[in-house]
Length: 304
Image (cartoon, rainbow, N blue to C red; front, side, top):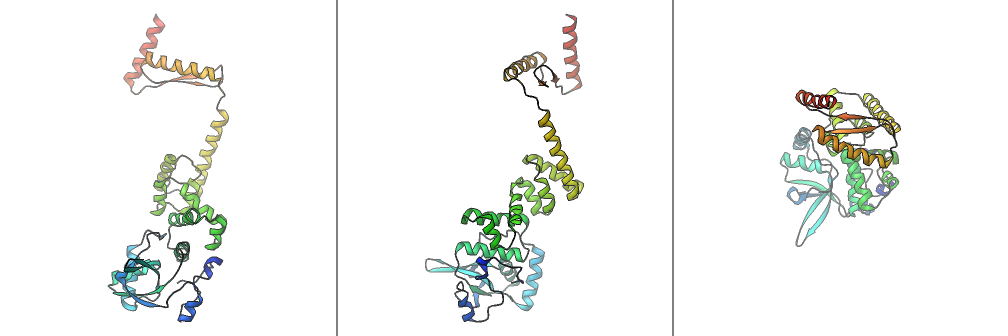
């Protein structure tokens, strides 16, 4: 495993800081059943709950070429799953190595069999991927959410376990408030995390997506996005300030008048009050012929 960036107390006892070299050292971990062993690659399965969902095929092929020459240098971490008389091993950490080993044509791979709870398995999978910087921002956010939702942890407890600040975990999970189409743009690296966080200032999901597409098409910087979102927010706040308070009884009258004018003119009519005494009437048209028809109606009324 890569050099540690620091682990939470809950996992320091589970993840060794140096390679395991003896059965005694393994037993001292209190989480490991066996030292390194060779297991048939056909008896190993990926963990469906693994935080990482996407694997770079080019990088896998490079690793496979290395494995062909040097073998799998770092054992996979697995736990045994019993299925009646049969059993198999589910990966806790090392799915990328397992995938590359299959591409390299290996029949067996080195493993360390662990005896862990479901929560510990999720934590280790998450931490290994974070340490290797293998997770994209959305996968990382979903992994934090899983720890919160399924194991009833608080954000500060999650932060401690993954050696992140509470703010970092909170900011990561905020990305899940984005429209799913925008989240996919982050996964596809069409948007950076900085762009995505700035877009969170737009609450409407469809507007988020429309704006995200504009950010990508126009190659806007994060600073540009922040400025534009701030401008949009100021416009929205200004509209709220200007929004008049209308007598509810007048609103009912306006609604009835709108319907009457719609029937008379044959098009949509909107009454926009500024206050209880003033306002404007908007009449929509959808072609030059329709405009001429509406004007003709008014002229005929004037001449009556």
